[in-house]
Image (tube, rainbow over all chains, first blue to last red):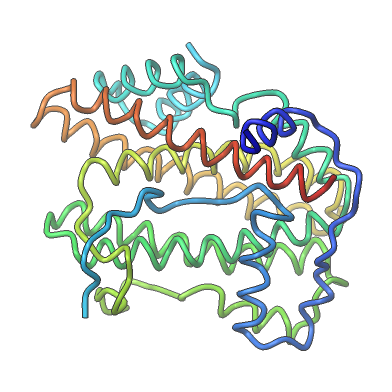
Length: 64
Length: 250
């Protein structure tokens, strides 16, 4: 139900609030912190994600 | 025919790809039956509305650098495990391209928003790219969930994802060039956006050719069914991403 509501909402093009993660926030962070922050920002804040690899990862034994 | 299928097939012909009977048919049928959200007007409207905030645009360039770097690593792991030499070679080149794109997005940030990140930060953002080149050893990352051989299923998924990435490029290009780029940087930014777009079209092209090759070997019905199934999956992913964006902004 929540998913359906979210999808209905997605069709509206109302972007009102500014994002809370700002590029300047990245200054002073470690490489890993920058990467982690951008991963979080990717879908939640930006929403337009670049994908190049397969998106349905097969459940296989990882290589050792 | 659905607009995204029409645009994609037209781009392939302009790129020099001959007619691919099964691939063209499978793409047109799947996108017509299950129209992708990224072909809707609302998708473009949401992008343009979001892109009215310069900080959002700057952040979008950085998350693109992160995504391209991450995708490069996944493709590299898969290429390393793929025994078909031709498929592996093309996936390896794809990964090298994406690693270069990651660095390209950081360069774009510097060109378009020189005040957003100083040189030190931009240098560190370079670590988002794995920096692959033709001499990098083709071995998978230990424990990578992408370390398995690519089949036609993976090629179809990559193809659909690249089609959306190409649409994303078409959306961001005029915004970056006309709304944010200073005139003196415009030629360089345009050049970078040109090669990004050519690369994305090339990635659609090589996966399309390999999908067609697989259709010749195993029959078109499997390709038709798989394309439809993966378009459905990817539409759900896109809907969820856009819903999260809309909810985050509300």
